[in-house]
Image (cartoon, rainbow over all chains, first blue to last red; front, side, top):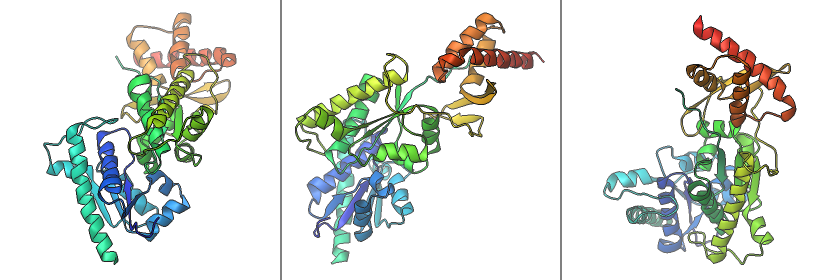
Length: 136
Length: 239
C-alpha cells in the first residue's frame, strides 16, 4: 500500500445478489472516484485465505467493510481473521434510509441501485476522512 | 407429488475486486448463470461459503462445482477444497488469457475490450464443463468428480437454494453408498402407483442416475440395491 493510502476498503464480494453488487460498486466509487489517494481495495477471499500482502494491508491501516446484507460476511471475516474493523457499513442500512432507491440487477445495476451505491460511497468517503484525520 | 431437486453445477468465482482478472471471473460466472446455462447452474457465494454458510457448503459437498479464479492464487478453488470438496473443474483467467493471446486486461470496475473477450471465453469454457458434468456431451472433464463423503452422518442435507435434499444410505456390493434424492424418488414412484418389478427397477436406476454417479460396471449391483430398498419402502407404506 502506498504511504498516502491510509484506509483499506473491503467489500462483500458476493455475486449472487443485488446488494453484493451495490456494495462492490460503492467500494469502487470510493477507491476510484471519491478518495483514490487515500484508499485501497482488498479482496475478502485473499484476506481469509491468508494472503500475506492482504493481511499486512489490513493489519497496518484502518479498515472499512461494506457488507451487502445482514449476514455481514466481510465484517465477520475480517474480525475472524484476527484483524480490526474501524468502521462497517451495509447496503441494507443504506436502503432502509432510502426506500425509494430499490436496487435491481446483478450484472448491471438499475439507476436506483447506482444512486444508492453513490450515496453509500459518500458516507464511506466521510468515514475515510475521519479515519485519516485521526491518524494524522 | 414431490418435486425432485434437479442436478445442478455450482459456480464459485473468486470475484477479486482488486484486479481486472477477478472482475473477469465474476462477469464470466454471471454470464453462465444468467445467459448460457441458467437452468443448470447456481452460484455459490464465496464470502458466505468462507464465512461458514452451511447451505452453500452442503451444496458443494453433494454437487459438482466449477471454480473460476482470476489468478494463480486460486482462492475460489482452494476455498472450495478446504471447506467442502475438491472442485470438479477449475479455470484460471490468466491462463485463458495467455492461451488465447488476448491483450492486457484492464479495468477492475469496467473491463476493457480484451477483458470482455476473456470473460466470454471463460464463460464458454465453463458452459462446456457444465455440460460435461451433467453428462450432456460425454466429453471428458478434467479434475476429480465431486464425491459424496462416506462419513456423512446427516440423513438430510440442505442445498443452497434452501430446499431440502433428502439422501439415503444403501448397501451396494457390500459397501454403504449415499444416494442423493432417493427418498423423494421412492415417494414419487409410490404415489404414481409404480410397484416393485423389473420395469420399475429399470426406471429407478435411470432416475437415480440423474442425481448420482453410477459406474457402468456396477449397474447391476445398483439395480439390485434399488429393487431391494424400494420393496422395503413399499412394504412400510402398507403396514
